[in-house]
Length: 492
Image 1 (tube, helix red, strand yellow):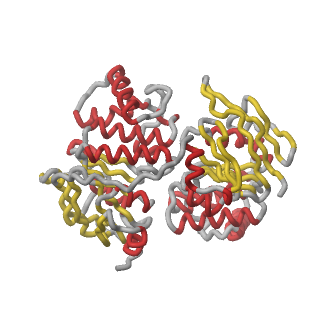
Image 2 (cartoon, one colour; image 1 turned 60 degrees about the vertical axis):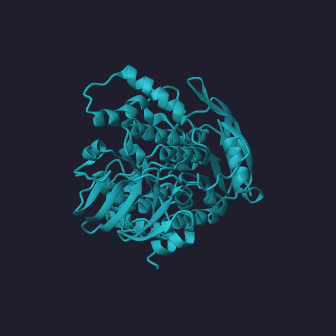
Image 3 (cartoon, helix red, strand yellow; image 1 turned 120 degrees about the vertical axis):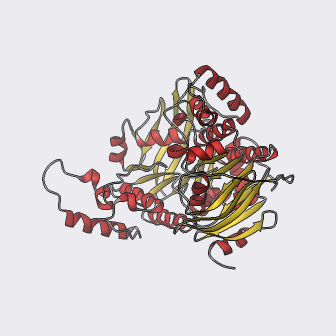
């Protein structure tokens, strides 16, 4: 196959930090190339160099064998390079067709909406997507929004499509549909750079791979000529050793007890308990009620009936504030929009919840920074300084800041909703170890995850949800993925 895109010796630095160093690789026509690396490895900088957001300091980029300059996004678009970022860029109050043709709006004159809707339907049909083009985007599922974002890129006659963690917020059949779409693009000759931390997807989809670590290429080749452990070793810079499935065996008294909890039309007769030092995993398909359960316990959504006890005392959780003051914490699924103030510093983010819980009325920046430095050391958070905006950190380090926030608040129960979503395998292992350490300190932990190996690796017990109910309670030491899935789809 002909080479479509090539990077030769590309380097980029920011304020003395070398984000990319002498990066070289090739992308062939109709090839799916996996871009792999830990958070902070340089993947985002590389993507931005190709999309026109960053201009490299050194090296060159070639399209079809000819050097090109990509100084701004318009240059990338003119070359047929499109990027779909992990954070979707859609207009929620516009319809599907309005989002799809937005870049083709004329500067003046009337729009033939009948024609636009027909063309939009036909185009989506060619991609195997069935969605009402007159629906507003905010009414779509996460999977439908992801597909629409990709369709927007393809509508511009893309030759190179960069997908940044496209399946991070998807699960089950939605992932399969997206991967099928990528395979279809490959058959049409579109070259795809596929960024994912889910190596099982990489092996099922990609033709080749590029591994980055600390801005340097540590491995390239054909995906068929490597394996999972070899890729992970290239990512982390050392030989990968698989961790044992371990849980805390020394459990205390029940800390959290939920009895007959109901939320009209959403949750039905939910009862379970979590003991000190225990991890209770919650599994189930998308829409089964897992996140809704977390939000109900935390007070983010009102419950219709039921009882929540904390250390044998009934607590009236009327909202997140009352949950925090009672000793319940939530690491939400959407950490950037619900778990962090991204424009504030890491130090401020770490201190805020503890201040609320302790009813402190004034902030002390010096104390905040000193406290943040302590958590940076304990949790091995990588950041230039605790004073930088938390939004500038990698996903794994942002998640550690969220965890530090709850550690500082000294809660008794910690609910983790998709705790490693969008986090590389090295950071995942660190999060897992942190969960084990917290259990050893006597916290009661609930882990909600779409990744069944993660649920099984962490949990003493597993609750499987189906249609808003607990369909099964399984022993974490003996449960299997097949057993969990059987209950998740309504089997016995």
